[in-house]
View 1 (cartoon, rainbow, N blue to C red):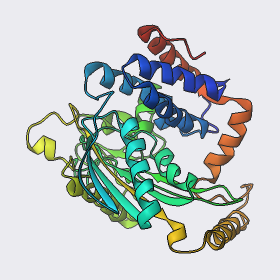
View 2 (cartoon, one colour):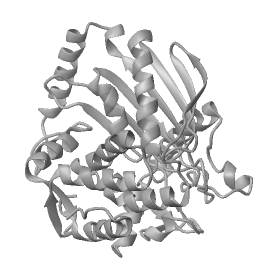
View 3 (cartoon, rainbow, N blue to C red):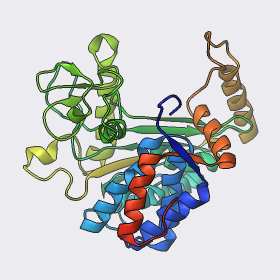
Length: 363
């Protein structure tokens, strides 16, 4: 976010959460679920990951209004054992699904040591790192993956969109150090960054997409529906694109094929609308670290491991080295105190949502 030259206004976190909660409740989300869902949205902006915070609200509003997502799902556990569960999410609002499934994995891992939950018939989870972090808050390791029913990414050396951006999040707790939190798309750029660039009339900073002929481009339109595609993490084979594409396939296997939900481009192959209903499948894993090692030993080692990275020699012009998650938690600490920096163009969009839904404006 630093250096993007977008005018911003600082807004208290509590106000953001209240606005999102009111919007979700107005759209029919159960009040008991609207609060936690709002926290997950606000957490993304709090940590200056704007792609999956308030910028997602127009999508959530549209999908909940149209019935594309179910605001009050009835989750069904189709198969279950001490260390696993298969959940049908009843076309749920993904932010509700995520909390249900991760908490189910956490409860099972508390007894079994490790637990996996596979989910079908759901929708976008938004900020995956928040759901993985629920396990870290319980001194567990959390892993979350999600796919999407609309492919955006072509394979290395390919032109056909075959998989979505298929993100992965992994969270592990520290005692004194900030938690480890890896939250990445398996494409070189998330759809959110392309969507924001398009909304602001800007080009992408790098050739993260390609046109229908495979020519590299910075045009954000090529990442959306239509010709062209987003490139996998690594971009080209010589830079490891097969690793990014391989990770995307692994996400589809664990999320879609394991659950019997959506995966790859199967909706398109069947001639179905790829985003009409049930557009995502997910995978949640909780590892109860105390089942493997005494808590104090593991936390001491985690702190030492993370501190060694943080204190390692930075290159010239960099204040210090950061491990995944540290920058986000540094931003969180500052923004809890000073307010969350929100772009003025984003606030204008939120004002329109407030007016349309009849809820108090954000700012």
